[in-house]
Each structure stands twice: as C-alpha cells, then as structure tokens.
Image (cartoon, rainbow, N blue to C red; front, side, top):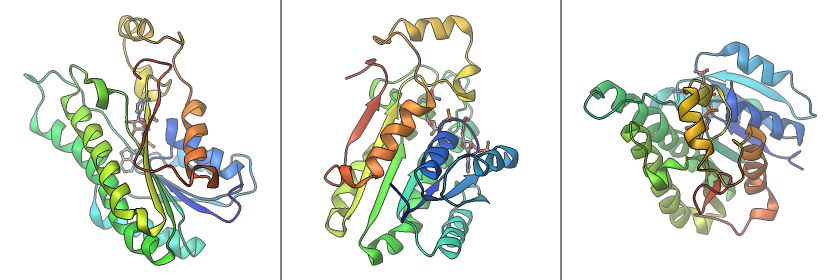
Length: 244
Ligand code: NAP
C-alpha cells in the first residue's frame, strides 16, 4: 500500500509512535524511526514484520537543528520523504500553583515547537515535490481541557490551530495537514496513572474500554493513504465516544 512512500515518525521508540511506525513498515513504506533516548525501543521497531525498509535516527525534535538533521538523514537514506507524523510528546503534569516554568517550557518545546520544527524543515521538500502528508498527534484534552495539564493542553490546542492554518497554506501544493486526537490510549504515558484516576476516565468512555495503539495507527495510515486525498485541516477524534 505504501511501497513507494517514505515516512518519518517522530517519537517512534515506544507507544503510539512505535505502533504507527510498525504499521507503515508492515504496509511496505520506508520508515524513519525517530527516538530521543530509547534506542532499544527504536531497534525493536526496526525488527518488526513487513517489507518496508526502516532506519532509526536519534534526534531531539525540540531542537531546531536536530530536527533539520533528522529530515536531512531521511532524505539522504531514501531520496525523499512523503509523509510526516508529528507524534513525539511528553507530559509534565502539575496543578498551576505548583507548575514551574521549566515544566511549561519543556512541554511546549516538544509537543508544539517540535512539530513546528519538523514541519518547517519539511516545507521546502514537500513544496518542491508538490506532495506531502502531515499528521499531527494531538489529544482529546485539547477540546475539553484537563486540570493539571495546562502546559500539555495549551501545546495540543496550539498544534490543532497550526494544523488548520497549514492546511489552508499548503492545500494548493497538494499537501494535506490533519491531526488525530486520541482519547485514553493504553501506553507507558497512561499506565503511570493511579487506578482511581483510570476508573474515573473509564466511566466517561461510552465504548467502555481504553483505546489501543492500533486504534490510533489505523486512522493515521488511512489519513496518509490515497483514499484520504480530499481530507485536510481536520481533527479526527479516536476516543471511544468521550467527545464528539
Ligand atoms: P510514550 O509512550 O511516552 O512515547 C513518547 C515518544 O516520544 C517516545 O518515543 C519518546 O522517545 C518520544 N519523544 C519525547 N520527547 C522527544 C523529543 N524531544 N524528541 C524526539 N522524540 C521524543 O507516549 P505515547 O502515549 O505513545 O504518546 C505519543 C503521542 O500521543 C504524544 O504526542 C501524546 O501526547 C499523544 N497522546 C497519547 C495519549 C495516550 O493516552 N497515551 C492520548 C492522547 C495523545 P524517547 O523515549 O526515545 O525519549
């Protein structure tokens, strides 16, 4: 399905990013598996099934120059990049009274500026080839807010605004820009939550289960496919019905 395509997945050494990278590899794409620290996780993704070729590239996408090196290495390895998945994300939760400036800056730098860095460096290559697919991984909390996550929610709401703006800016060049907003997905990020909080979340999910990483990777691959060529500027919710 993606045998003639190259995809960069940021933050692909675990969780949702790893699942997305594996799915693309399985569907025949060349995959650039970006990680920041977890080299072992990235190596596991390289070993996963599928005819696509995959390479692991270490880069902190919050840093403008490292994001550039990631794009350059991808183009050097595969000749071009067709699909960019801005997935890398962190949390540093705290109530406002206790949240320090560093926690705000770190979360914005990775979740919002990181996606901007990657998109900025891919803009010229996408323009030149008059083709590109950008999929940003947001979160349901961008729509509903969440106590203790003012930094994270601000970053994700910003990412959704950037998605809609760039869809307008890039449409003429055959580049689509969409976001996927997962609800509560079972990954390392969420397994750390206390059981009583998990129970409270479950009560708000009409489908009565937490999502899986594959629930997210399915829709990401669809948005990157030719079947989705008339979809741009959209925020696609994958949350079991939590928010419409
Ligand atoms: P995760 O398991 O903690 O994975 C996060 C990934 O991001 C890791 O591969 C990590 O790499 C990478 N990363 C973090 N900072 C980075 C940086 N500066 N540069 C490059 N890579 C970086 O988290 P997840 O749950 O899969 O979350 C993935 C995305 O989905 C995030 O954007 C998150 O906000 C979003 N999301 C998750 C949920 C959920 O329920 N899990 C819900 C809504 C949205 P290293 O470990 O190598 O540092």
